[in-house]
Length: 136
Ligand SMILES: [Zn+2]
Ligand SMILES: [Zn+2]
Ligand SMILES: [Zn+2]
Image (cartoon, rainbow, N blue to C red):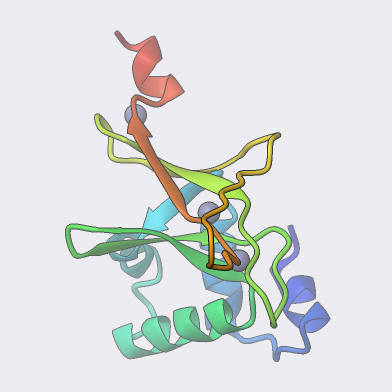
């Protein structure tokens, strides 16, 4: 993944902090808690990190995967645009190692409720991840 290219494609200026955040989140499939991001990006000040996260969310590049116990988890978006976040995926949290992953599922998640229009659905599943299952 080339973070600089991703930013240019969205018409965003390439800055160190933006590249650093995209690269930190792009390392694996896992969503990263804000606390971990701060540790990885300790050369930047907290306000800069937070503002940049909000800007990248606004541009459809990253999303908040989960918010729990005052910790927010962030992950890269795959096919969102600056106009629309479109996440047809499930967020999975492992109860044992607390890792959070974006899981892309083959079936679209659909839900219809009379008299309302649903634009997006957020699903958080909890259980035991494959790594933890292997250690049992
Ligand atoms: Zn998104
Ligand atoms: Zn686990
Ligand atoms: Zn996600």
